[in-house]
Length: 293
Image 1 (cartoon, helix red, strand yellow):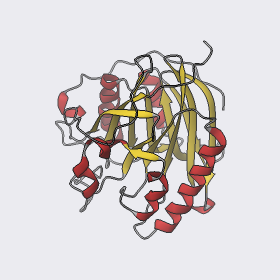
Image 2 (cartoon, rainbow, N blue to C red; image 1 turned 120 degrees about the vertical axis):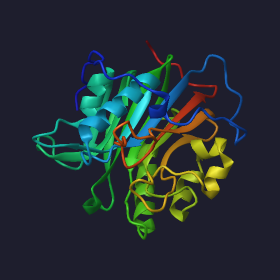
Image 3 (cartoon, rainbow, N blue to C red; image 1 turned 180 degrees about the vertical axis):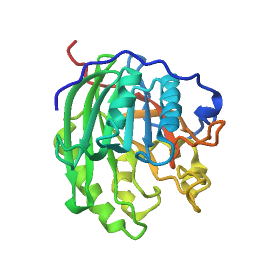
């Protein structure tokens, strides 16, 4: 897929603190090695868009306004939808922010209706790849970008795993596919993984990531691992769990801040999504490979 040019930032409605959610939180957690002053900090947001359900035009306004205020370096979006009456939602958000977008789907390119995942960034893209995850009839994908920031490169992967409660074995297979994909494409750069995993970090299948990756949010909120924090909007789900995650490769990042965002409705009672978003700020640890300008 060819790179798309950046577009001018579209004007949107003002942002209130309520849209952004809880204040930044930090605390003692699993600490990565000391960072070098020259290594760049970066911010990552992940959000399940809930495709076009509900009042999408009002939801879009809230989502774009919050992202404009946050200006994250990378945004991972799941349940991105397009059809003849709906432009690709990730492209619409990217156009409003002035970001580049990489959308991946198991639906063929050129088909009017497509559904999938996307990565958005305001930085230079060095590499991009995608992979369909097994089993293929579950229609799941992983998207990968290598991004240049502050003269350094890192790899970010976005995914959305199988959704049923009893589907742990399917998610395990998909996570094995994802790990293989990362091994084939990361080339030694620091790795981040973001998305909707449809599982809390304590689920057995998630141990496949726990070996090599840190639960960014949980590292700063130790009580979140045992429960009490959710990314499932209680306006739509009877029970909640934290299933939307940003995982940071062990020893390659220090997690500095983490919070749940987009967890308030607007004045009309419209929620941004049936999921809450997660925003994490990290710093790459030294040494980090310097790339050519």
